[in-house]
Amino acid sequence: MEPTLVNPSSLAPPRGYNHGVLFPPGRLLFVAGQIGWDAHGRIVSDDIAEQFEQALRNVLDVVRAAGGGPEHVGRMVAYVTDRARYLERATDIGVRWRALMGKRYPAMALVEVAALLEPRALVELEAMAVLP
Image (cartoon, rainbow, N blue to C red; front, side):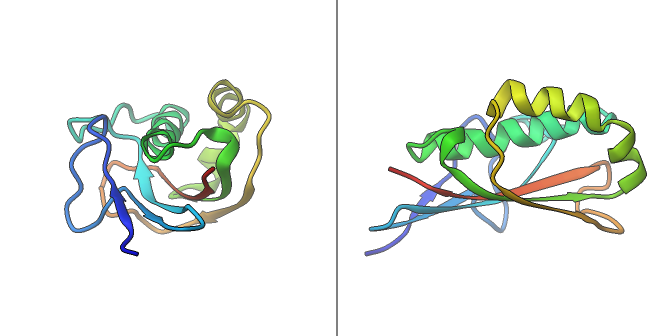
């Protein structure tokens, strides 16, 4: 069976990638790296906590468009351009995480990178979910 491409209209149209790829029959969803931009492709803020929240909203939009929810996210990788900046805002990021994910914490990794493709992006989240 062919995979299903998941590109919700709530996100900016992808260019050169898909927001999600859902593989049957196990319903394993791979979510492309999402940054803190809105449906028009505009970065929402220069604050890392606000970008993190929007990136997480974007991840969850892809998961929901494929028929899942926060409880189905099994793995997430966060890429940040400034570890110290992330740590300074970690408490606020945690508040925003719990508002969207509750107390669900998938297997996670946090990686500091020199830069992301979008120059104003401070964080990028990619995820994998197992859907019902």
